[in-house]
Length: 359
Image (tube, rainbow, N blue to C red):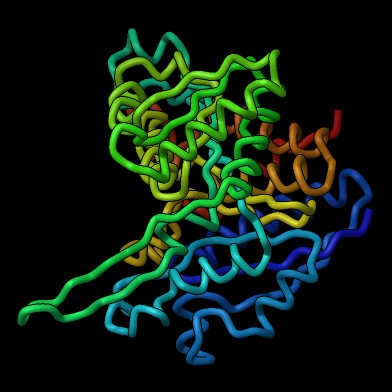
């Protein structure tokens, strides 16, 4: 199979971690007889430096015309002083909107080898942590109207949180369909005791539930959900929520699994062309030091194979290789523990490649 992949190395540790994922994909191509063609795309701070724009139109065009997009990370303090509409993160928001990817799926799964790295009590971890947060990605307060005015001698900033029924319905269906493929439990998270947008969200979700009688729908306020994720994460299977709530909750969920460096994500819309990236940031303080954890990016590549390219066997191959490396006690600095062997970013990539085997 021949697939075209747009590659955004980005800023900070982005180029290092993406390089390891590409090495893994090349090995998968060899093992299974595929061809992966890579097209480089500038986005984020590096694009600002080169083009004066966090995502030039030509770069967006390359992404939209690809079969899928693999992203490292963007941003850093270097670009904090640029105007708000030209920040590196604006490039990411424009990419999501341009690709029409409205559903961000972030798994929160604890690898058995890293159970001791979780900050939660052992008895909580032993119950199991394995759920997915389905986050609406191109609506809500991040994409609403933003204004700054001056009133009575002081500045006033307003960010609008708005959702239409159709926007809620399409992400709600992703939530229900995802739950259908797992344990058939869906938790809809909102703030309906305060926000009109959340009351509409809750109403649409309950209307959709009638179409999915095999899925058990529950409601939870976002502040309670934040508490429950650390108190009893085993209760969750699939969580569906709006953009800002999902952003915050998924970062919280990643930390209870032991390291944010282990968590991949996929962003999909109406087509199979998706955006795949680890959920961590660009970590400019360790860039170029060969100590970053590439596993989140490698697992993002596995998600790309599974969800965009319909290559489940190849995705399983990567995930099994990661597990085998962890079984042998190899760890990057962020997941290092007593009795394990510390390795760098590049060596971790090589170790994963060494464990790739076609079944």
